[in-house]
Length: 212
Figure 1 (cartoon, rainbow, N blue to C red):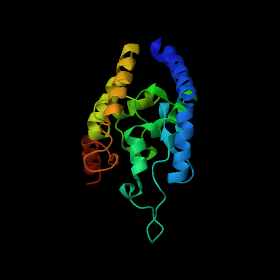
Figure 2 (cartoon, rainbow, N blue to C red):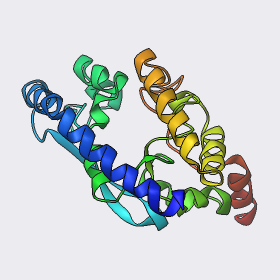
Figure 3 (tube, rainbow, N blue to C red):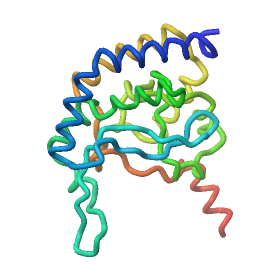
Figure 4 (cartoon, rainbow, N blue to C red):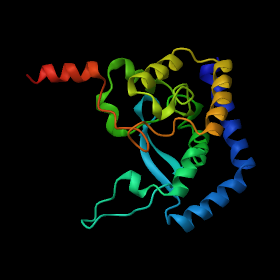
């Protein structure tokens, strides 16, 4: 009952409440992003949702469009400004995702929606993370976020998918507030965000064998 009906109702109420209560923050951030980073203010990127249906994820922009002499975008760490880092560290860049939640593309709690380019690399177990709506926050986000490995992240996602409860979601939301206040797990040890996923070691090994 909770997973199929109540959770969605609470998502709608939470998204509406957040948009109404924090509307003034949306306006201030939008103005600052336009001044400091330019337009567009909202960053949109295709992500796989429930049942791998593709949708556009909304975020406040955190990077410039700076390019090298060949017209190619500079690496993320060079385009991520101090203001952009602030938005990410406070998770304020994620606020527009409440509109994704309102539209039914996301949930408040669930596995984070990752890049479309990762879809071919999931094994069957990892793919089960797409059996529910992706979340604004999730079990992996309160247990290391970008500072943990892809394997650990997927284990936590799958654990959540198999054990969805109201009180479990409440605990994750409370834990998320603590993580955001402490600015924990924003980056991995070697990147300003998270290294790209190229498949688990087990899957990579299977693919290597198949090409011999």
